[in-house]
Image 1 (cartoon, rainbow, N blue to C red):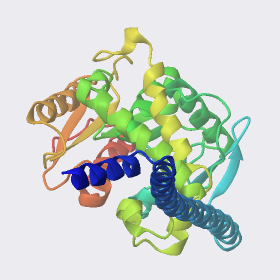
Image 2: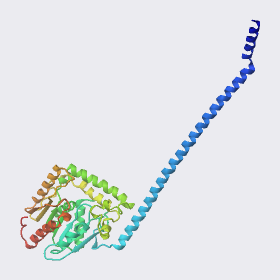
Image 3: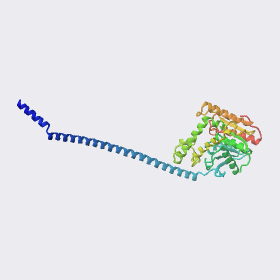
Image 4: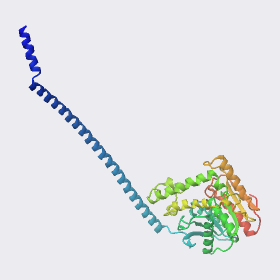
Length: 380
């Protein structure tokens, strides 16, 4: 019994030994420090990996930015060189005539008795779209077509685009080309509104009209038409930027029907600033006075011989309601003259000059011959 008490006392003394307690505390501290060091080491590894990932990501982003900058510089250089080459190789085939602060390009062909025929192109296109029909009309008449400001070989205008302003430029162009007799004016689509304004403001210069897929002042403000004009303007503003950096030229699909055109034609439609000029043309709709945004807002066509050509093939990009309204608006145009004829191009869409050029040429011949012979238009 005595021996057990002695051993227990010894154990108790050992348990409360200060040296032993200090040693235990030291060992625990070392363990904690080691754990802390391991945690810090792991954190440092993670930070190093995160830092390396961030650096790698930054390098990739900077490389992509650098690549884009290099491609833009290369595209800009390519486009500048291409435009300089086109200007050297493909000179304007017609005359350049001053109409004030800029020059317009006009091309005339053919000869014959009767009035001069003047073709006013559709929106955003120059005379190259009408070379085929011009050649056919030249077989029986003296016929001229031209590039509006900023299109084809014509210089851009400094003033905002309005239909009155474009009609005034046409009058100055005819004077400069020494065409003083009354003309048969052929207006396609957008060009038809210019022809209408010209007939109102310069009536003595008009002998007859051919309005091809034109529509009247009211249809231009149909919500569907306004939305289409807005989209077209936005596309051309974007195309202007793309064109500056050489993106449009090498991609035939972006040139629409001119994707496989001969080099001299592409040179005319890829002139500097052409897409900006197209976008500016659409702004003319915004400047039509409110009082004229109605059927007959530009006035009647009196007793002039007028042929109205309308498509027979519905446009798949518009609603059935708009297609019906389009047909009606062209019939209203024919009713503005007491000497008119309505011709349906059965196999054509909007671009009759491409789909059925013979229908357009025949309409011009009818009006030309009626003016020349002093007779009324025969029925279709």
